[in-house]
Image (cartoon, rainbow, N blue to C red; front, side):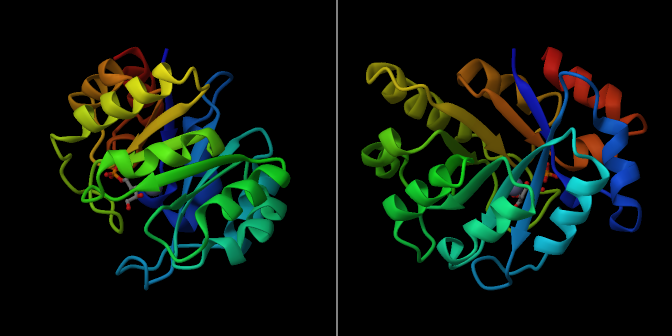
Length: 216
Ligand code: DX5
Ligand code: ZN
């Protein structure tokens, strides 16, 4: 069964812990934490102190940190200390990929690698042994509320097939424009984790939206 990781980017930051509490329950405990530096993507979101505060308020959550920053390698230790459980960074960023994946694992976190929609899925294949998770972007990173790119399920399926061929225990996550229509397409293509911002936090009943996505 798929997991859903509600993206805090669509929450009300003035009442972040309360909004997040509404979507958490036993078995639904992931939160997707988007970090943007205004350089890797043309937007700025939140960072270390917000993660540390949220972790203190909601220690039961699994913090799935998505770094959309140019130098992820310089910050992985700080994010692990602030409470990250998974740390995902982009293949297109400036840090050495293998070294950064190894550093994340050495910190006791799951290491995730993401790719922009324009990067060929095959570019990630040589690195799959060193990653615990691949985050397939189904929108251009930087903003919530964009439309799902229909080529994403085929990209998920290609990465999934390569992982299976090599018997790798790889998690596949998809992020961007996920809702009750697009989520099942990604789950059928092999995604294990569906990131959803607007379709969860802007729903009348965010928890029901999580359950619906999870059920497909
Ligand atoms: C976009 C972020 C996403 C974003 C998804 O760059 O990585 O996690 O919050 O938002 P929705 O689900 O609204 O497309
Ligand atoms: Zn994200």
